[in-house]
Amino acid sequence: MNVMVYNKYKELLMGLNIEVMKTLEGVYNVDEIIDTFANFYYDKMIIDITAIRDYQNADNLQKLAMNINMENVIILLDDSPETESKSYLSKLISLGIYNFTKNAEGINYLLVHPHTYRDVVNIHSLQDLEPSYNEPQVQKQTIIEQIVSDVKGNNNNNSYDNYSSNNSADYSGAGYSSNSYNDGFIDGNYSGRSSKLKVIGFKNVTMHAGSTSLIYMLKKMLDGYRKVAAVEVDKVDFLYFNDRDMVSTNSGDLLKEIMKKNAYDIVFVDLNSYEDVDICTEVYYLIEPSTIMINRMMKRNKGILEKLRNSKVILNKCALGSEDIATFEYETKINVLFTIPPVDDRKDNLDIIKKFAKKINL
Image (cartoon, rainbow, N blue to C red; front, side, top):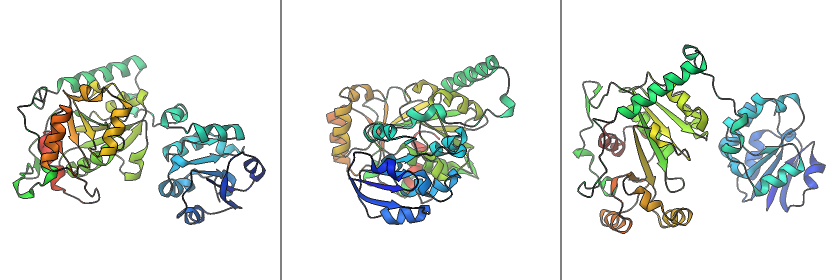
């Protein structure tokens, strides 16, 4: 069942051939909409943009995006100059609002085929290159190629050669001891410092395996010791961390973003569905080893285990004990590099995150 909030376009929305269990009519503050539907379970929420007070300012929708799952929301836009502008639509996309349209046909389509970032990336205005890189396009490409070359070459001292069965996994999540960890910080300097940029990628193998939060915790732990940035590809989750060094981009502009971070020590990349992982110094693949996530992964890609056997695999949000992890390794023939239990990303100086950073030579 669906819910609706309408004002100017009541007739259009009521003419849709869909089941509706609750409606609101009039003009409302975002807080009123959130409070009204806080305890409702619904399939889709369809909002007439004119029902939101001061909707011409896209910033007023930020609280809505932070309190309601926008994957389940369709916004019907009006014909005002504000909402027709590319900057307005780009702001919606930056808030994670991808499902918007101006007619009934668009609503019917989005009910069946909800948009993802990939579907709207062509109208998302990202930051322009910084002034120092305003050379002709051929020069920009030369700089990008040089950085990628440096990144690929910066793998001599910190590589893991085809992680073999002789290397035992670190089952820290099963019961680690904070006393056993030497955090590597000496006289205010991090002992793992490198003179070259490292681009370190994280890629979820199971759905929602936690790459975004893991990057945030690593960056927060390293800030103050290293110059660290983070880039996410084809999504906008970093927006909610309120950190100017954590930015969003699309697949086509990822190399440009890395280029702009050449003065940093480390750039973490949340790869999402980006496939050209060779741009990274290292790539770590995250698996949440719950039954539902493993079964869903296998149904989606039956050959995934074979592809991961020579990769650096992290069990994240892992509640398994050491015996169960050993069983997982035996059954999947995957060598687990490290395990991380469910952790509170609001805490500072988490021992398990420090231990993971040391494990991967940060």
